[in-house]
Image (cartoon, rainbow, N blue to C red; front, side):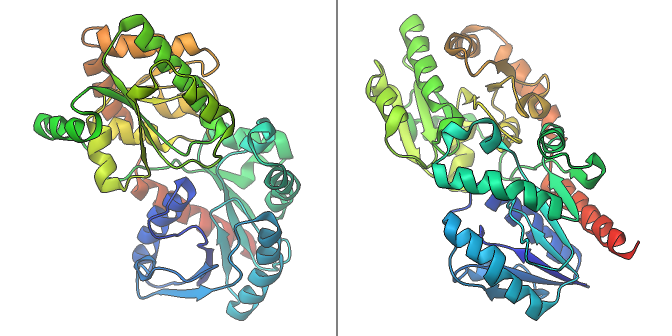
Amino acid sequence: MKIAVNTRLLLKNKLEGIGWFTYETFSRMVKAHPEHTFYFLFDRPFDKSFVFSDNVIPMIVPPPARHPVLHYWWFEHALPRALKKIHPDIFISPDAYNSLASPFRNLMVIHDLNFVHHPEMMPWLPRKYYNYYTPRYARKADHILTVSQFTKQDIVKQYGIDSAKIDVVYNGANPLYAPISEKQQQQTRQKISQGRPYFIFVGALNPRKNIIGLFKAFDMYVNETDADTCLVVVGEKMFRGGDIEKTYASMAHKSQVIFTGRLEPEVLRNVMGSALALTFVPFFEGFGIPIVEAFRAGIPVITSNITAMPEVAGDAALLVSPFQTKEIAEAMKKITFVKDLRKKLVEKGFQRSRMFSWDKTTEQFWGAIEKTMRKAKS
């Protein structure tokens, strides 16, 4: 079988959520199925480390597509031309895009519909693009994968897609994440926060991640406890300036907020594993991989009680309303002062983390490919 894959988001040292999904699943899949040929379609020169096996044929399909106008050109003109040369049995797009112009059997992955629910949190042109094309992509797809039951039901409700056309495959978490020794924790805290305890946030600094609410909650927490505790923010700023910057500038305790930028997994493993807790309280998530990473790292989790986060966290986290600053601050106080709570949450987190692995994700992903192919024959 010839399998063509949209691998635009495999970018060296720049993997974000969907890029990691693509990396973790296809690095396993191509090795598990050497009898098939995989065509990886990049939109720019690629790093050779992404050619995971001898049965991968990489192809560069210009132009680099990082703008809605170029998205249109790439998916509706450049990509169909490349696919006609390959003539694949199936085209797979793991980043929620598709090609309306391609005649080939296709499977797409939709991670969430945030742009439907929070259009105000996205620039105008990408928002218009997603709202116009995503429902058309979904209807064109022969089969759809998504990463939570929440998002599956959202797709059904928003676009009227038959639920039988959608499979759920949960994300995994990097196996690097595991508890570290007390000595490693002390050394890491010394490097990151001059030895002080800290809460950690991991993710892109965009509005839907509720960084503003987290800053306000942290200020409230320090005001009410006088704790010499830091907030470590790991991630790149997607939308610089605006309300996030203003809120940070107005914080009473901004000197206790530490921005690290993006960290590679080998480093983030230690930084995560040395934290008091993960404070991850977005307004909207299709899954929330940092929750599982924190479970595996052996730290407690504070996360939102809406969208997919309760589905992922179960009873192993403190669930709070992301719209209620005081709830977030109170959860931080509980983590700091309630005896044995951290230990209880860590134990539950370990148990919960066993539900999620990239091996399981890849196996179920392959099952969806086979299902899509069976549709083609029926």
